[in-house]
Image (cartoon, rainbow over all chains, first blue to last red; front, side, top):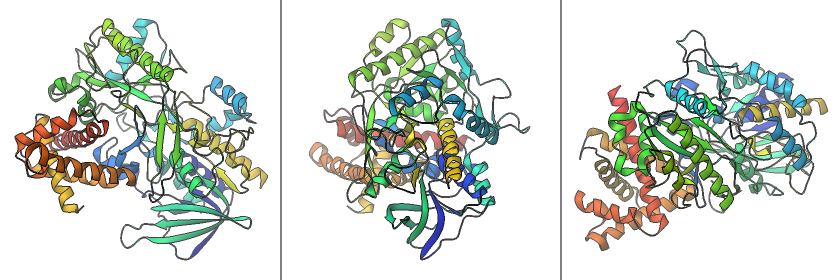
Length: 482
Length: 118
């Protein structure tokens, strides 16, 4: 792994400052550095190899999750959310499931926000390039049994399901593969092209300074006291994710349409119990998804190791002990919806922003509808018991039991998400958008955003493919202009 | 609020919650789980960290009214009664606090047992 920059002192001068090294920031830094630009990449988290801990483990939570994974959007119901905080960002901790943006989603964003250059044809070369660079490919062998159950259920009901490709390389390692995260792909490319990387460095605020931008940051080395770092840049790309990007901009006094329209994929879950074994120590990430109801909602299978099963069964204390002896017959499935709207606000006196999220009654009913349909699918696949993510909720053993889930109680429903976006949407409609069609912050020359913030709403699919294609498109547009 | 007071209360919560979830009364892993919970609290967003510490203080103090002593100094059976009262409280933040600790303890305990089993 390439070495990061030693902590600088005084004012660091750079042509381009990239804040955040997740999928948007890493590809931006790599493309600009490869084009000969002087690039400095700052990352709030530490620089660890992908292999520093087992995937989806307690160690990974401690090393690479923002807030140790103890992050929640306030509301009723609350939505627990997960973000990466390490070099590579979310790509280091996610499942690696890849989707292009559905064409109907792009069409809706174009119409609602007046976005230039966002047709399928416009994005096609960027999808192709990212798919090549990340080795997006199908699982080489048979999918795990828990994953196949979802496909079985969909088939029994006459629904469409698919095996989702992932950014994984399979080099004769028994089919486990290696996730092509940013520390495996674009970060090394950026460093090889001369990009400087300073991890463990949090940007506190940005200030316009006579045609330049000044970033005030704090660097926290592994040993020794934290120290302040100042960066002077001609251009800044903020790529800190859908929560941290609007928080930084608002701390910097840039507030127009910033942090007012946070979106996410609120996700409810079931623990399903089958008569046969579906789980194993090395099950890995199941890759089937049911898209029959997309873009309203879709279904998939989650990480289902015993710690996650035990966590999920907290909603059902009377049956929680089943995990101990029956975990091999149990797996976790999710219903991913797209409703609700949230806000991100810095809090005076605190470093971390407050995230709020609200689902109206119709959106809550949509979560209920998604749980009912997922329940039908799992029962059709042969599940003998389903435990929904509702505190002391019903144990579902037949379709009649699903009726109780149509309108879940707000204060007992447990939702989570790993997809956050749309907090600084793009477009030429200045009354709604924070950035223009190519990620330039309106009325802030030299300031760009290149992360999930600029999406205009729920993509209905895992958003990393969309984020990377847009970041590539916008970085190349920047290079052409300048 | 001293770190020692907080760690003692979290340790008491950890032992009680492991027992509540069919774990043994004591094992070498108990203290490791308690350390994990304290560390995860330390990683939480700062405003949430403060709110959780204050709520933990209230839980510890409430046991004086409910059971005659601070939570961290109660015997296991009386701790369980205090926890059950908080877990069923009409106030959401009381239930949320128990759920927060329960989530970390159960996840940490199960993960450490899984590690020990190889």
